[in-house]
Amino acid sequence: IDEFRPLIESWNKSPSLCAINALIMTTKQLIFRAIAAACVYCCLSSCSNSPVDVTFVVTGNDQMRFSQERFETTAPATVTIKFKNVGTMPKQSMGHNFVLLKKGAKTLEFAGRCLSGGATMENDFLPEAVRNDVLAHTKLLGPGEDAELTVKLDEAGSYPYLCTFVGHASL
Figure 1: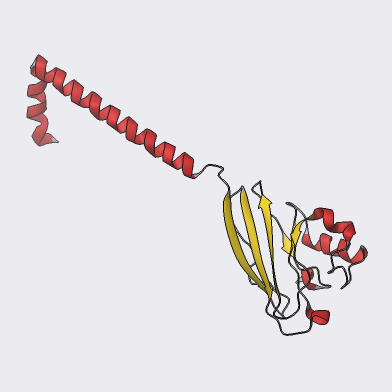
Figure 2 (figure 1 turned 60 degrees about the horizontal axis):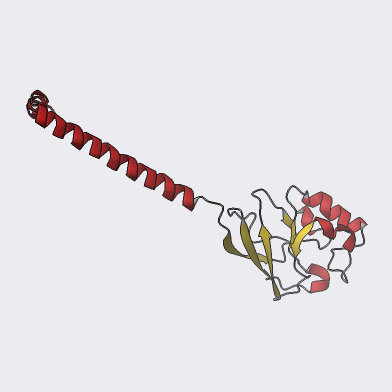
């Protein structure tokens, strides 16, 4: 910048050069503001509330564990869960389902209400008395079986999930 200082000072002494300098500076400011506005627009449009479609693949195993402890996406979103029982034990002793609960629900409390509400193999360990707290669920799956569920999430937040087969939610 110091090497250009004499040139800039000479421009300031000449009225016509001073006007050209002001025009150049004004044009640079306008271009900068236009670029800044375009960047803000692009950032806001990419962060908008446009719905997204996302798919997660989850497995349940004979150790009573899901392959994923949590999922993250933006809201609103249409979320598809592809769930598979990768275990080898029979459905009667180690079946698995995937139950997605409403935001803020407590999994252990919900599992307890399933038991006290009449959870059985016939109702996939998900009695009617508790289904109003469920956003989506799969049927109870035996070894090698898979199922898919899709749910639309309009709000950001934490949506817990569990397997309601007796004892699985406590692990």
